[in-house]
Every structure is written in structure tokens, then in C-alpha cells.
Figure 1 (cartoon, rainbow over the protein chains, first blue to last red):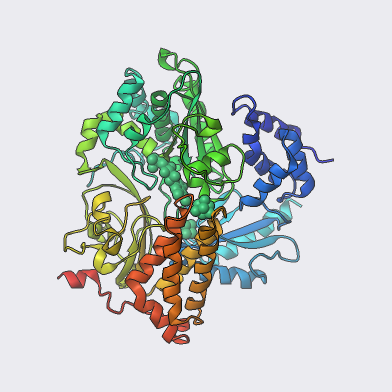
Figure 2: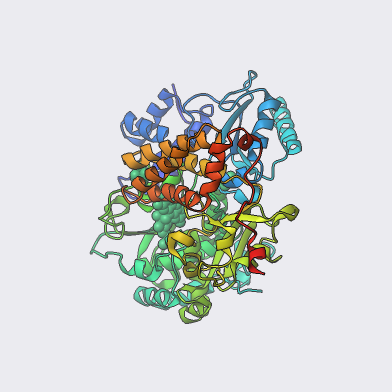
Length: 166
Length: 449
Ligand SMILES: Cc1cc2nc3c(=O)[nH]c(=O)nc-3n(C[C@H](O)[C@H](O)[C@H](O)COP(=O)(O)O)c2cc1C
Ligand code: SF4
Ligand code: FES
């Protein structure tokens, strides 16, 4: 059975309180963020069905939203997702080279996950960090002014974080 | 030094928190404004000449006066913090470092418009910023600037932060409203306009982060004083986020009297082009506005000095000018490839099209594929005309302006750099290893002397 933790359920109640009576559907995007965080980094169908039930809406209303927005993952991803920006302003400052470097360093192509399940490489469009390019999103934060050395140290950081937390 | 109204206190230690913000004059604008009536506040904003900083530049006071006020129906103010236009990262700076400035502006604006529930809709990728904003909101509430019966006026107001989830189109105001209602970000057909029917069918005003932050200095110094800064209809100050091939990328506040040349080369701003390279082109107002070659950037076609303001940047129309847009200033040096850069933008718009209108959904994908062929040496000369034709058929034929925003960059690239596209077709192998360079787009500074 899929069920949010007590903490997340409290969070959901707080989110509901932001909207007027009868407008809980507005909670859909924030609740999907919570669900993705809590249930393994992606939105499986049973998870979306659970969210529909929680909000009192039909499952299709959840599916159509989940598939529209790029931050919701529709299939499993690695523990650390490197989302490298490739739009013009980042390209002008070498994002192509950084993407190639990550590919060769991790031995995967864009969209793939390393066999150990640790890293997924994605390319994304402008994240609002154009002045600090090249950059990527990693979890909740941005990693900016990327260089090959910086990428190496981020990969190391992820590996040791995962070793400690396993 | 130019006038600073928004970032003047950005370097004060602890300004992100209430104590330092208040000690440095914060919330004085709320005290002033709450002594006025909502109608007087709107009049004051009209006097200031403030224009929307989200991209379109529509006068804010006028927009506010259009808000319908039917009896017994709630009204809403929504702050547009979706900031997704490539080249634009100014709102992020305000929210990250001066959250109380935005909250203060939101309190005054909510009072003026009668919004008891005000939402900040922020792009989902700025995932660490909602915590900063919510902390500031909590501090404001504890100090009596939010909540019930603010300053004894009988006005109640709460501010909530809502995260998006990755969709540029949700910056368009009706798509944003749909998204805030928990739906896909599909723009609505207008009319009705949000001022009549917006969030949950209620009258709604959507304003950009920077617009709402600018409300604070307007009440601190007065609308008339604000209007004296800048020139003509470009009043006050504007944030410019500068990026690309410059020495000092970052967010700058300018009063709109400085020249584009000063902005690019002065050490106070961009600090010139790195590695002694020359300037090739610039997109002065975010990816949607027309690119300008160096020779049209510093001087208009009439030979006048081009200034960093709404009128001057658009001087010459689309034939020889561009637009202020969102203030996303993207600089390309002599080694950059216009075809490749345009391809990344076309790919962006194709990715972000919501898919409701066929000219946008199909046209953006088609432009991307044609540009891909041109960039990778598989193009034909007729492809350039084809591209021109596709963009022309998108423009003006769609529900929302994303279609135009996708068409304009392609049109401008062909208009000003056609020979570079042709060179790609005629030299398919060479174009894979070398860029076209500057060719006849001689450095603007050399042309000028
Ligand atoms: C495709 C598209 C994307 C937009 N993105 C943004 C955005 O990220 N931020 C913003 O403030 N306005 C954006 N706008 C403009 C808004 O629709 C709206 O005009 C603006 O929020 C009004 O605020 P203002 O009057 O304060 O400028 C966008 C418009 C379009 C058509
Ligand atoms: S122009 Fe494009 S983004 Fe706008 S409504 Fe039509 S398909 Fe959607
Ligand atoms: S282009 Fe990469 S963050 Fe804007």
C-alpha cells in the first residue's frame, strides 16, 4: 500500500490550507513534488493514483499534469541526476564540452543511468543561471561555473555521500 | 554611478532577514502606502510611469486600474516568478538576496488591489528559494505586516508560495493561472482577460517579481520622483541580467539613460569581451527578442547612440532594432556560430510549446529540424527560405505569444546573418570544424571611429 509518511501528510494539509474551500486541486503540483521525493524519485502509476485519491480528483487529471511538466520523472532515475543546461547562453560558455566530459567520465549517453544506479545524465533547457554557466541542477541546488575538475569533485562527492548513507 | 533603487542595499550584511532589512528602512513604504486609499495607491503607481518588467512593458498602474471589482467576489494578485526566458536570471537574484523587498512590494500591491490571498508562482527548478521566501513571509507576519487587520486598516492578507514543475509556458499569465489551479500549463484564449476572469474565475492581476519589487521605491521616494529617473517612457531603473561572452556576467541595475556601449564595455557592468575578442552580436532582451549584429547594437540605423531603454532598443522596429524584453542580455563574441545558437533557441521553443496550436507545435519542430540540418552540413540553400516561410506562418497565428517568441529569433538571425547560413550550406565540411567568424559584421567600435 502506498501511503505518505506522517510528516508528508501534515505537509499536504498545510498545502491544502493555502487555497480557498473546494480548490484543493491546486495542490496537485506541490503534492506531486512531495510524492516524487518520497517514493523513489519518479512517479509510478500507483503513486499517481494515490495522489488522485488524496486530492479527490480522477487519476487522469493527475496523469495529464505529471506528463506535462519536465520535472516529474515518468520512469526510474539514478540516485543522482545531473541535469545539464544546453540552451544558447550556456552553450556560448562551453556546455557542449561539459556534457561530453560527463558522458565520457560516467560512460553513459544522455538519458541513461550508470549500471550501479547512481548517476543519470539529462540535458535540460535554460534553468535561470545563464550568467553562471556552464551549470547543472543536482537535486534541490544548482552547481555553477562547471569545469572538468569541478565535475570530478561533484562525482566524488556523490559517491562518498552514497557510501556513507547506504 | 547610476541610481540604485532595488539593489542599493544588496550588500548590507544580513539584509535577507527582517532585522537588517527593517533597520535599513524596510517596510517604511508599507507604512506610507497604508495611509492612502487603494485608489490613491493606483494613481501613485500611474504617476511613476512604471512599466511591467516581465517582458511586455505594459504600464502597471493602468493594468491595475483594469481590475474588475464585482461585489462579493474575491480578487487575486499573483506574482510571476516563473523566470524561464533564456538569458534571464534577475528575479532569482531579487528573491534570493532581497526577499523582503518583494514581500514588501506584494503587501502594498495586495492592499491596492484588494487581494487577501496573494500567490508567488515560482519556477520549480528554483527549489531552494521557496524556503527563503517563506521564511521572509513568516518574519513579516510575526511583525504585523501580514495576517489579519494589517496596521489597523481592517485589511487581511496572506502570501503563499507555489512551485511550478518545469515548463517555460507557465510564465505566460493565463498558463500560469491554469498551472496554479493544478492543471497543465495551457494558455487560455483571451478574452476574457485575467482582470475580469483569472484565478478560479475571479478578477486577477499577474505581475512580474521585479515590477512588484519596484513598488517599494515608488512609495519611498514618491511616484513623481521615480518618474524623473530615466528618460521618456522608460522611467525608474531596470535590472539587466548579462550573460554570454563577457568578462563580468551578472545582474546589474541601470537607470535607463546609459548607452549599450557603456553597458558592454564599462567595468561597472559587463567589463568587455574576454580574451581580447571582438563583439559579433547581442540579444538584448531575452531569447525571444531579435538578435542584433554589432554594427546595429551601439548605434541605431539612423546613426544615433543606442541606449539601454525601451524606446531606443526598439528603434528601427524589427528591421534594424530589437526590444528591451525581460532584460536578459546575451552577448556573442566573434567565434560564436549564429546557426548553432539559433538552433539551441529553436530547440528550446519546440520543447516548451504546449502543443495547443498547430502552427506553434508543428512549426517549432520543423524549424528545429531544418536548423539542425543546416548546422550539421546537411542543408540546402532553399532551406533558408523555407525557414523564413515557416517562421512567418507561425507569427500572429497562435493562441499565445510563444509562437511569436519562437519565430522572431529565427527571423532576425536570417535577416542579419543570411550569409552565415549560406556559408554553412556551401561549406558543409568546413562549417563542422570552424565558425564563420565576423565577416562583414565589423566590430562596431572600429566602424564608429
Ligand atoms: C511564453 C511566455 C513566457 C513568459 N514568461 C514570463 C516569465 O517567466 N516571467 C514574467 O514575469 N512574465 C513572463 N511572461 C509575461 C507574462 O505573460 C505577463 O505579461 C507578465 O507576467 C506581466 O507582468 P508585468 O506586467 O509585471 O510585466 C511570459 C509571456 C509569454 C508569452
Ligand atoms: S502558441 Fe504555442 S505555447 Fe502558446 S498556446 Fe499555442 S501551442 Fe501553446
Ligand atoms: S541558458 Fe543555461 S541556465 Fe540559462
